Image (cartoon, rainbow, N blue to C red; front, top):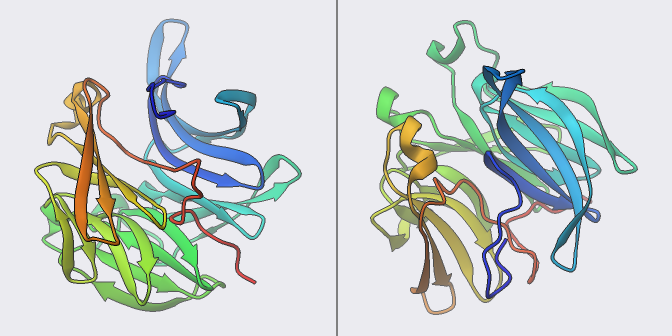
Length: 275
């Protein structure tokens, strides 16, 4: 959490998805599981809290255990949606008061016959709803498969309307700006709007927050998986009105950056309800 002067750490472990809905913040928290002092592996939990005057209040676990490869989450129309990446699906949790209840799973690119080796494995890592349509990022494990990343556009009933092919390599995040999609071409370090590069940096680009006046984009060092928790990160500030990168903030030793969200002003990259 950055308050304009200080950078504060609220949670240990790897935090990927972050979203806000109806007064609560929802976080996909990836953490190790122990039996006594014996490590058993990793899992993810969806935790939520209220954020009041710079403090976390009413912290609780809403859903656990989930697969450790849960990525981005978002919320609209009384549901929290979780990209269960390793299983090629998006999990839907119904919000009842301040509690979450599992409802169903959506498989927009089909179920898997052979796990991640399946030909239809898309490595779905980002979800966004805007203007009555749902957008999913198909990362497609470009470095392994040679397939460029794609954006799936779905109807509110989760039926695929079209697939947008991109030049992205192992892309993350998806946002709609006008009639074009914006995404992070992660491996190539480019912020893309359709086929146009808005920003080009020497970082693994991942994490996007949007306001009318500025956008924030995350950058991480290229590193092997086991080293990513000890690398440096950077946040880039992009001015969409003048089409330029205007500031950077380096964060030494923070590990890989997975997600960025704005508290104020409102984050336009957080989903909106479908009327």
